[in-house]
Length: 377
Image 1 (spheres, rainbow, N blue to C red):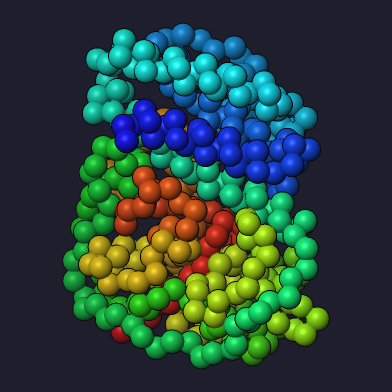
Image 2: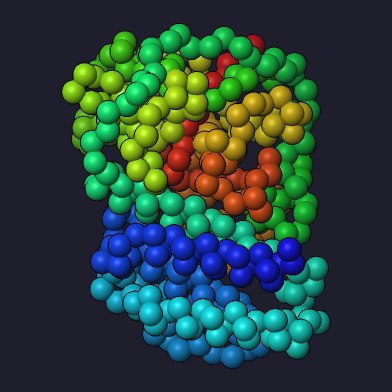
């Protein structure tokens, strides 16, 4: 599949995600951090128009279009009232899809089009928004999914002791590949002390053990900041976990309610919950350098099922240079955003690489995140 065909396939998938919710729900905001599904569909179209028309062809777009569909344009709470309906966006997307190949051919010598850089950038951008659209589906299901009677529920089990040990030494971190994001570059070496990292992400059965041990009621596993967060929001289990009248746990995901497999990775936990579980298990979260080192060496299993919280704040590598625009990474080097590594089952293949860095504030739970344990030896 050519890059242009991949971009087209992503638009088709985004359209399907919009259409799979009832029409009345497509323009609604289902989570305080998430725009309506229709806004994301319009944003994908706008971003392509911006890069190809404004940046490559030097043709200005209407200001009101940018105001609505730029990520830093209209405030998120207002978008549901202003987003165009699907019957307006669909023909616009079809017309753009037909026009794009000719634009690319006409401006093939432009620097942004060399080696298909812009197309690869947009494929990754769209892939990230498709995952966000799955988060919107999750938020919708959390409000609308009917009660579920699980046929199988995870039983509490002890924390697995299977670990990979790595001696102290140098490790390659990051990449110089041009089609990656700016925060992944440049490639560099770091000196890591010895560490051990779990073979698998923490599983549902292990997390049920944390719940059964009163992990959400005992402040000794939590920092003062995370305990205040837990109390403020009344957090008592991972996002989407529910109990039936018999006390059996089941889950709610983007597709609705489902049984929880005790051997599958837990997801729907914040960095606060992940760190609390790690203390309960007598371990810690890995730094992203430890995670990437182990992933590059092929030591980790279960990568790609959930995002995995890391212990460090999101930060620039030495020699960082913002590209292709300042706003993708730089605003989030604030000491507050935490790094996540790996990928979830909803992450697009274009983003599935050991150097990719996700980042969120530590209280976020809607991002399909779990954790992997680590220690110093």
